[in-house]
Amino acid sequence: MLQMLRNSIVVKVLGLVVLTLLLCIPLDRIDALNRERGESQSEAAAELASTYTGAQTVIGPVLAVPYVERWTETQRNSKGDVIGTQPRSEQGVHLVFPETLNIEGSLAPQQRYRGIFRIPFYALDAKLNGGFGGFDPATVARSVSGSKLEFRTPYVVFNLSDLRGLDGSPALTVDGAPLRFAQRMPGLSEQAFGSGIHAPLEGAALSTWLAGKPLAFDMKLAMVGQQTLSIAPIANETTAHLQSPWAHPSFGGRFLAAERRVDAQGFDARWRVSSLVTSARDQVRAGWLDGAATVQTTDSAATRIDVARSAAARRAGAPQADGPLQTFDVSLAQPLNVYSMSTRAGKYGALFIALVLMAAFMFELFRKLRLHPVQYGLVGLSIALFFLLLLALSEKLSFPMAYASAAGASVLLLAVYFSAVLGGWRRGVSFAGFVAVLYGALYGLLASESNALLLGALLVFGMLAALMLATRKVDWYALSSGPSMEPIGAVVAPTAPNVS
Image (tube, rainbow, N blue to C red; front, side, top):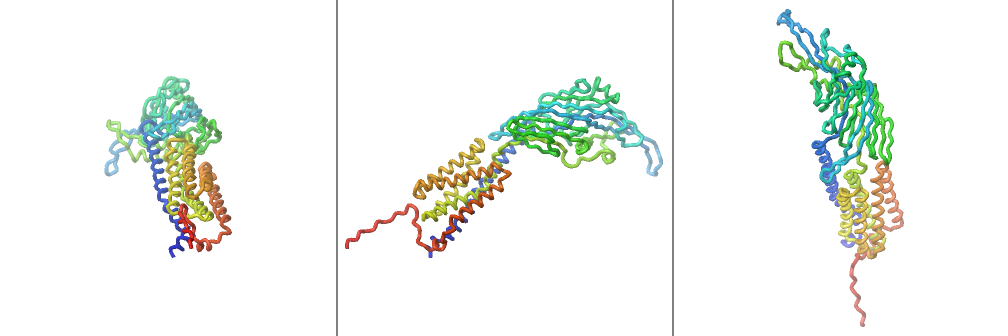
């Protein structure tokens, strides 16, 4: 009975299935290690963002017009009788967005290191130009009917999500007059869009503004950011032209590039966004209004936030922010993320091990050789360790080089091992050649992400078809009940001579 079980093909196949499932345990541990290393890379990027600079979102330039709204409020007693009046005032900021905004810039890719991890950065050198329409005080909404507005000196505000990325102070010219930026955005909420800078109008620019005439502006901006640049289309007509020698851009955000060219020399992209198709201005206005309005009495030096009045004003005339700020983005994507590629390779680990064990079983079947379960286990472990070796080498080498090195080491090991196990170097080399073909097919799956499903399905179908064609004339019952096969390396005792 025991001998029959040892020679049973069914038992052998079931044993190989169990072995494949057991080998999924080291594959799972390798996958967990891969995810851990990927998380460490994300932590390195976050650490660089906290100590250097992060991804950048550009909002502006916008013209902010501060004002004080004054009115008289009737005071009544508990019976509803008028007992007097009290003057009140509310401070506010009116935002004027550009009629046109054109951005011309270039992104120079950079690399920053944190330990063994490389994080992509960019240096932006851009020119912004456009114009504001003439100011009409009647466009400023009043929170109280009949109130009077007192306007203060307006200023140009410009917002970056991380001001540490500025490379020097931006050079701003309004109506031909140079203006100097200062820190913060007075009267505007920093909680909604982070910190910013402002430049008060003065000289000819202020005179032109007070006369109600349009203002033209030019601005030179140099800054550094981490991987992604986002731009809010706040003008009536926003156009942008960005180019870079980086050959692997990723376009995202609410609006994709209207025109783009991507080749080995880099990318060249253009955007055209109208205010008719975006609510970015409403989002910016609503975000900046939070905390911008205050109400005070003229007979008291104390200033307080009137939540009810400012909320009512926002409901009356200010749209609310809805979801994330609408932008158009470009990212310097890494062409081969070693951790994502290693993760994708590991997903084929169980299939890869099963195909190799199947090939070893075919050699055993057709060559009338017996392989021990320990030998099957060592072969499976060598395949599983390929994925660990791939992960380790890809942190030091380019992914194609790491893959070739790991696959070459695995194929060489199997060639040497099976030359001894199968009783001949030709058999060992042919088996190793089969494994090399599998490694090549796996790399094809990884390199062609868009066709991975099709290539994977064709690979599995091809292997199954080859197995079925190779065994179409095999008498499995005869193999199971036939004479046992001798194990490789078995020593046959010499027969004693017949002396009778």
